[in-house]
Structure formats: C-alpha cells, structure tokens
Image 1 (cartoon, rainbow, N blue to C red):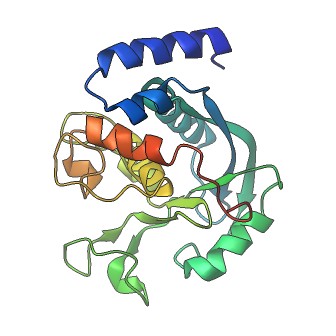
Image 2: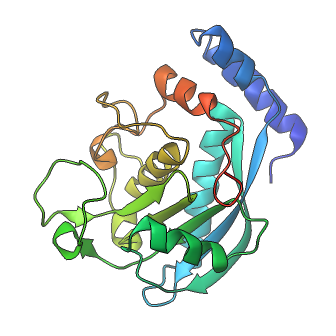
Amino acid sequence: TMNTNSKTQGLMLAALLLAPLRGNAQELLSAPPRDIPVCVINDSQAPVHQALILDTLASVSAEYSKNTGISFQTIVVTSYSTDYTAWPLDLGPKLKGACPPEAEVRLVFSNQRVTRNDLDYSPDKQEGNINDEFAGQTHPYFGFIVLLNVEARAKRSDAAGHPAIETALKHEIGHLFEVEHAEELNSFMHTPSSLSNGGWTIQLIEAILKNKDKRWFPRA
C-alpha cells in the first residue's frame, strides 16, 4: 500500500507533468488524496482467478492515484452470483447487500460470456452488431462495475499493447465518475476501450477531477 508521503510526491510530480490543466483542475489535483473502499465480488458461477483480480485492480488503482489522486482499496473479496446482466435498478441493491456497508464501490469480476443478443435491454449506445460481446456494465448512481469474460480479455491487449482488461476497468471507473465516451484514440474512454491506446488525456483527467468527491448509493 502506498503511504501518504509517496502519494503526495506522486501528486506533485503529476502536477508538474500536467501543467496545461486549467486552474480549477490543478486545485483539485493538489487536494488531499482520496481512498475509496472497494468490495470485490467474484462470480461464484464463473469465477476468476483471484490473483488476476487483485493484480488488475492494483495496477489500475496505481494509475488513478498517480493521475488523479484517487485510489481504490480492496476491503473484502467475496463470492456471489446473480444475474449480472439485470437492470441496474434490480442489480444495484443486490450488490450492495452482498458487501459490507463501508464499501463505497462494488466491483464484479466474472468469466461469463454474454452477447448483446442475450440482453432484454440496450445498456448503452455502442456501435456494433447485436451479437457483439457484452463487456459488462457500470452505474454511476448505484456505484457498481461488472466486468464479464475477464480471463479471456486478460489475454488481449489494447491498441498500445496494454492489458485489455486493465484498460476496460479504467474505462468503467471513468463512467463511475460520470465521464462520457471520447472520440480520441489516446483516451481510455474511447469506445470500445480495446481499440484505444489506454492513455490519460488532459480532458479526461479534468473530467474525473470534476467529480473527485462523488458518492454512490446509498450515500448519493
């Protein structure tokens, strides 16, 4: 776990590297770091190797900490299964109930493979054939992320050679902070994220910092 001094040093370095950020974003970047307690849910019906889950989350958390001052601290890893393609209104409370009350965000990892043809609703406006793989879903109010087909995606890379599953998680966390899709290929908020370079842009960092103090259900 990164201590406070090293986090502060990392934020100072990020501030120097990101000098083009506008004034308000620079103020947010220099604000105290935020540690978000996370409940990790491993799908009991299609489990993912726990080492892959923790390594992925640690890598993504380190990037978010370096670039935004936000880190994600795993407080529990639990096993649970439900219909992870369900409507968010149904899924959100179930995931909350599967986790301790101090968890602010719920992250689900599953090896289920689902196509959009399997869904009874359209979760987003991504282009592509209805038979394209459904990667998962995120809800910025209920505070959960569902990543599907994780181990298969972990073997793939994004356009710049980064692990596709890490780029996907960075992308979905962006949605937690209400960041929209980006056309820029350098941004991991490009969709699909696997075709992006998985990088951080000034616009992306500003958008995340704008909602750095966001709270989710039931604290929303």
